[in-house]
Image (cartoon, rainbow over all chains, first blue to last red; front, side, top):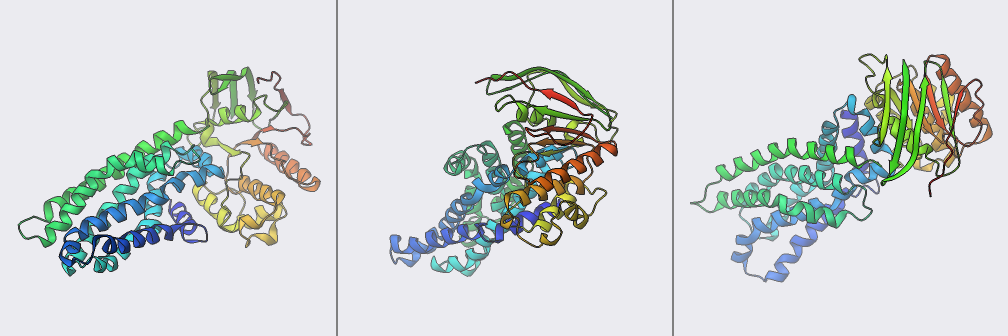
Length: 221
Length: 203
């Protein structure tokens, strides 16, 4: 399993892996917002956490279509499915999700504090947004894996995945943004929405790979 | 160990591709599946592996013990694609499959020597020629132990010398008690094997 993680990680960072596309998209979205909204610093600070979250959410959906499609095209997916007796397929999917998260989504989390400065956010707000992104983005990948597994046979499945997955990640977005606001706006609490976000991620870490495994198994042709 | 198929029927997209296929393969036996394009050779192999559901009949393995309870667990499947990543080197690809699928009798270097790719393990897989890619995929069969080999057009892209080498590897595998099912157009140079001719072509 470690070998699978390392292989997918290597694939992500080597030429053509596309791990940095997400970061560039994220950068482009966040840098454009102040130009569109105008130089109202208070307004930027107020919408900052939400914009960071939306940008990260959309950016992390970008590479998802390749999660299983690359393996399907070169025949690896067949062998991963055939080895299901040795390595439970859901576990294989989970490891692939974690590798994808490390290669494509973790850079977003690392870039988020820097981009928070563009939004004139306070230091503690930036920290809270980065922390909620760190905890919440795996959930996006786990749901996305299900979408990727369902659309694995479609050559242009990328947009379809986003449409399938977006309604399901709305709760993650809501609690992530609520927790980020809770850290800076005094009466609002930080801990309860943050804990719910943690719970969502753990819940989806189980449900997502299981559903994806079922879809992959019935999707081989 | 026995690989048994009874009255096996397969379909694709609701269209029947083959019907009533039956065979029994004991340890050390090979089955060569021949037939024109579209007669269902690849579908048959995928049905045997369990990658496609069968429409009717039964496919199973007997005497596989705890290690090989199902055909999927007992088989190496070599499809049309080589299941290797172009961006990784040959060695990295094989190391991954060895640690994922379990190790066999041969190390990676020995398996590559056997297919004549001894000096090329440091190259990215994408740099190899078609035949060399196929040979690397054949080396993959030997670095993890599986008693059943399901080979779909294994000689595609191979030159004559490699054809003979592959036939030798298949003979060795059978001599060691393995089972081979190969779909092919070409005579593979195996003697005393069972043959299955897929006849009806569905358009």
